[in-house]
Image 1 (cartoon, rainbow, N blue to C red):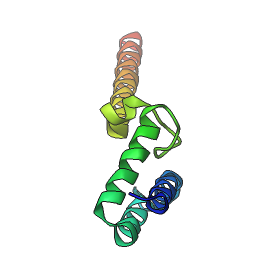
Image 2 (cartoon, rainbow, N blue to C red):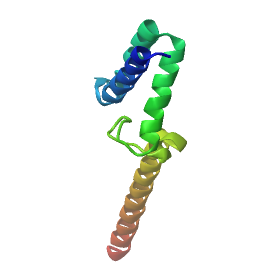
Image 3 (cartoon, rainbow, N blue to C red):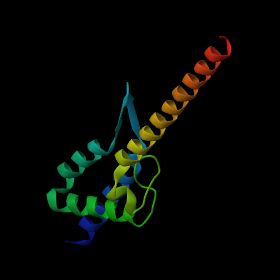
Length: 116
C-alpha cells in the first residue's frame, strides 16, 4: 500500500467518524450517514482499503474517542453497543412506571378504606 492509498484510507476513516454524528430522522427511526460513506468508500477505494478504514474507525472508538453515534466512544460501546444501553433505560422506565402504578393503587385502597 503506497502513501496515497494510506492517506485516502485515513481520510475515509475521518469521514466515517464525522458521518456518525450526522443523522437523518425518519419517524421513530434515525439513520446515520455512515452507510453512504461506507458505500462511497467501497466504490472509490476498494474492499481492502475500506476494510482498513473501518478497522481504524473502530480502533479510534475503542480507545475512547467519541466517534460513535451520540458522541460516545469506548470499548463498552463495541462490547455492548447502544442497544444494550437503550434496553437498560427501557427497563428502568418500566420499573418506574410499575412503581407509580403500585403507589397509585395503594393510595386508592387507602382512600377507599378511609371512606368506609
